[in-house]
View 1 (spheres, one colour):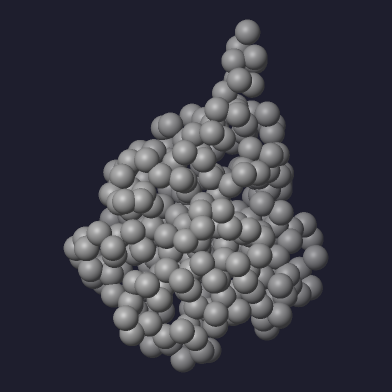
View 2: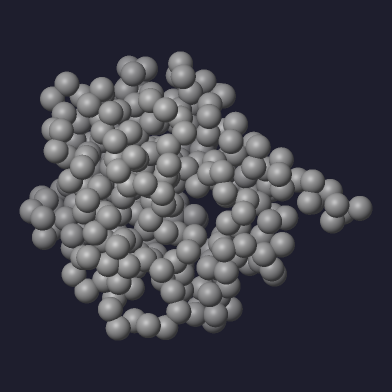
Length: 285
């Protein structure tokens, strides 16, 4: 499995995820991964019901593909390591659906022409949960599986209290934690993560304007430079604590061989933080 994949290319990402899926499960359905990626692409490209194509510039379809790729790699390592609880084929499939749909809450209905989907930053997790329920019900998924996907999506909330999520079993919880881990690491390890922080700030600013002055539950930022200056601290104090404690250190299964503290994603994120720290030093001088 190549570590460098063009995450702007849905076919390339789908192919990598398919490879991992087929290696993990002897009875894997070869039609499943291409099908669900096609569903997600339709949603984000404005080809599903009355939804417009995604117009949020940071939380775009590539952001979702970055998360999906990281998610499949993490669970591939977990399955190979033989860890309990064992990840079943169906739990992986539901988790893949969850990460592909986890930011559909940024999609706008046709006729919603004010601003971008970034205005839904504060409510996008619940909107994604509702979107997933509608899409999966229309495609004949049973209620219990829809609830599993919804619970996994809830793991991506910035300030979510994980103990309040009504997981139905330990496997569902473990896959949800893998999803939450992948959502964070997939974006922060991107080659252009530092360059896109200004765009992320613009999303927060739009959300603030739409929601009476609040940026998000993560906190407020005075400017794009303020966001950049706080990002290393966000990694050190929030993300590392989250992935090590709340999400049980599952990121270690991204290592090869796994588990390992060192892996491609952690190395890439550290490099991105190093790009930001010289600017902090210059500001303090």
